[in-house]
Length: 220
Image 1 (cartoon, one colour):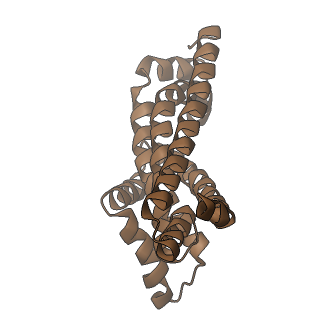
Image 2 (tube, one colour; image 1 turned 180 degrees about the vertical axis):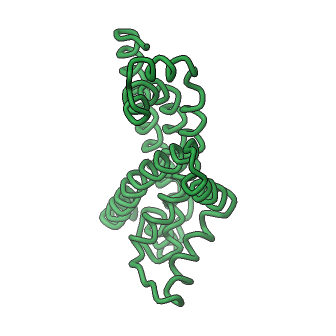
């Protein structure tokens, strides 16, 4: 216990890196999910095909390999990114691809009658998407987005392999210096678990508010 207390500043510093990488990747993943997910419904092949290629490539390859590619291969092509940017970019694009599938499915699940009613009211396609389709689709997306957020949190441990001093990296350093393996990894196990529970509770509250709003309003 005394060794853990002594290592607490390093572990807290690693936790901060984990949270910053996770938050940055979450923002990027959300943007990528909506852009690619909505583009998958586009009529134009020039928009639809690149979105689907992105989704398939990032879903079909390992997140670790993607990070290695960005960190070790891009510099050979003249593109040098700092480790923190690689972490955010790699994890954000990877989780965003899975999120895009959720967005695509949720938008497709909105009854066609809702879109037809919006068109009958004179709403343009973008207006109908923003005012009618997305509010209904978001209720379907939220539980899956919560799960993906937890997956993203767990995936942040991979950035320890590209020189970032995140929570997992600091635990590994503590283990190497003290050989107290159980204490090191049990500690971060509990931290990751508590963070995951916080994420799921946050999404649960958000889902409940969405449900209340939906019952209080109406659809077309």
